[in-house]
Length: 288
Image (cartoon, rainbow, N blue to C red; front, top):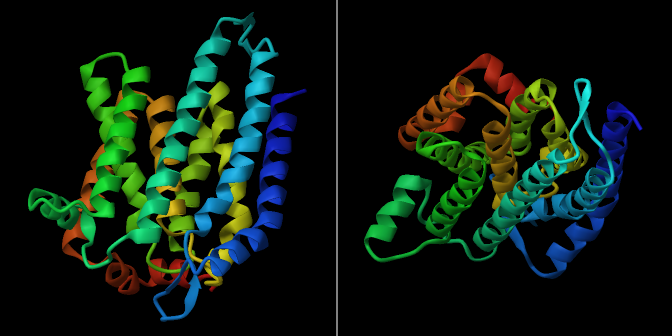
């Protein structure tokens, strides 16, 4: 089985499996009264990002089985012992995403929307009040630290990777204020990542990317909100892959971008910035 055929199989399974599960999860959330007004005050199910989970797990099982029973070839040499390393990468990737499914679902279910932004959540924490957003930020940071300790070569690497994973996790939250916006931003970032990654980890984006594409139209047409359940997972999937697959220069450049984005959005409305730019506004409204 060639690499590209295997990638195609994972993509098709992820896309079709998620597509047919969307009505089931939507009905489940509506029946459980997990609904919230969107930016137009229309009541729609929130937490629809949970639909990414089933096919992510199923495709992970397939990938894990193939990894355990295949002699992967790198260049002209076969590395049986590399399977352990690659299984660690798979396990860390799944671990990080499942953790943020949990934290995001908690925020969607019981989150208090009176406090927003990382600054606001940490201010509340300093006053002795833990918000779900504050928990999510701290939890995401510790998840990033766990992953970083397992893959980094030195203390500088640990710090850089932890910050990348934590801030990437929150990045999609910054965009998830209008239908389809966060997924558009995610695709702009994730597709180049998939194209430029090399080796075994190139397959990892296919555990989540086709699932997101299957759900995209539901989000775009405001038939459901993926909520933090989805946006956190999209963000951490980017952060972990950046930590896994790129050299220090690219990672530091990405970290600088993340810091700037968070500083800008703490002071200015991202929606207003987009609305004042013709190109960004056109892309933002495209498909709605």
